[in-house]
Amino acid sequence: MEIEVIKNRIDFHDLALIPAVTLNEMESVFSAREKEGRRLPIEPEGIQERIDPVLSLSSARSIFVAFEQIPFSERLPESKPGYGRLAGVSRDRDYHDLLGEKLKKLEEYLNQNYPNVKTYCQVDTGPLYERGVASLTGKGFIGRSGNFIHHILGSYVTIGLLVTNLSGGELKIQRNRCGDCNRCVLACPGGALSDQGIVNPVRCRSWITQKRGDLSEWEQDIMGDWLYGCDICQMVCPKNRRIEKKFQVEEPMERIRLDDIRKTSNRTFKKQFGRLSGSWRGAKQWKKNADYIDAYFRKDKR
Image (cartoon, rainbow, N blue to C red; front, side, top):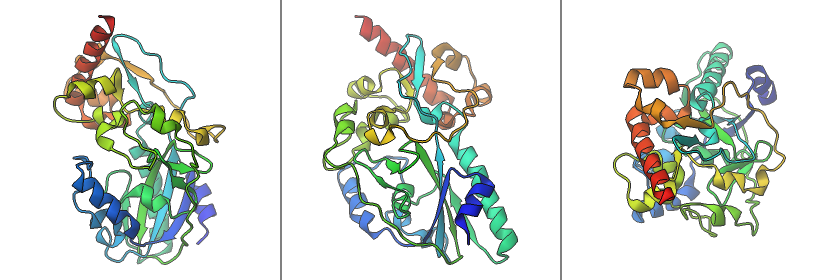
């Protein structure tokens, strides 16, 4: 199976094929996160389903790993009262849709050429640990920030998986290349990162902007005026310098007027903001965040 031909035919930013193996080395990592209270509510409870592709497709033999670069900038969006800032992942069309459409085309291609093929697909929506699977492709490594750092596209990538019952692929592991660099650790606004590479997602600004319910005072301080996501650890990463730009920006949005969010109903919210990946948490979440952002600016003036 010629992976490069398929990649170019469907216009993947990058594509790899590996055997469907269990991520045994991640079991202790996830166990520690569970024991220490670092597992997020949106993450699967079962460890085995995160590391074993057979639990997603019983006949799993291989995994196509697709990479899609997201919008990014070398500067942060300007902070402005009355507006909430967006991370690069939510400045343009939803990556779930973009990468999902390409994986759908890959499924169609496989069905045409391999009549008995069976597949399972996920783009940040299923249990399998995508960064862990990606680390077996030889295309990059998981950095100290917890992000997968692609050797050409940098860390500004999303990952999609297509598990199949076809044989093929090979494992290639690239060693961690962070070295002594700890810029992301020092820059993280929530102190979620460590020199040992242990990530505490509970203190991650990106998660806090997605968290349901009321925020504590320290969570509000970390969130600041960010409506969705955070790019700090990626912006300071030396591996993101001079990376190749692959994404196509249609209508980039770096920040959103808070009153525009408040005026929406659930239906109009989806129509106005549904193309952005950050909108998946819904109008209620963004309206809550808008109130916290207004409070942040009022506090900043005092």
